[in-house]
Length: 258
Ligand SMILES: [Zn+2]
Image (cartoon, rainbow, N blue to C red; front, side, top):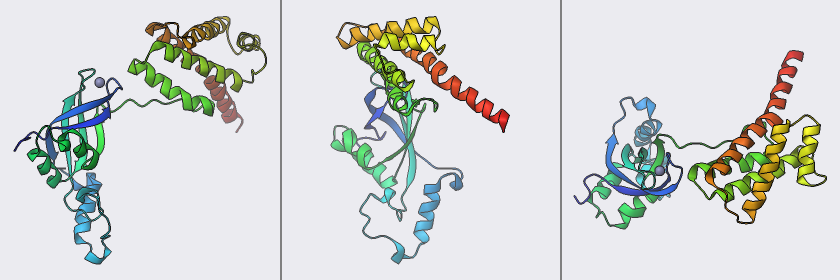
């Protein structure tokens, strides 16, 4: 056995640092579920083995563990450390004992270990810790909901601060439009929101700062990491005040009426 520990490499987004990395999974164990009812694929496999032959789709050319009628299905796990942040993670996946046996006999430098095992012979079930999910509050306008998760992920990933600041500025711009402010320069539109009591004085000042910092960032002037972090925090607060709170208050009033 060239690879008794069943090492293999897989491309994942690290659940700790959110970077895309080539993760080396070490010490792979197959794992026998205690209760088969907890593991639907196990039950499926047992059922498939009892199914009359003619019902089986003979054209299904996928690996045994991926086929409906496949009987050799196992759940396995292995652990490793991220090459970027050095934090550990456990990966859990479905495969087959035949695939694992191939892997354990493969050379550590082979394509099977480096790429194809992860690409073709497993179905990734999940990771511990689980990958951070980036979401946007449901009260945000659709266009902002599409942009916001990527900006938060960029910050955690440590992308260039100037890019993050410039994204924050674009999101502020979209927000102004969504709030009906389309006439005049950006600073006038921000001031209009203050005049309508949507923003406080301080929020207006911050929005103006973001507009200026964002302008510098667009023109490739260095923004630092803490500026990027502060603008992301500002947008969180801004969204809370201009989109989420009004929606929550409306929902509450609606409940009081009905
Ligand atoms: Zn990492």
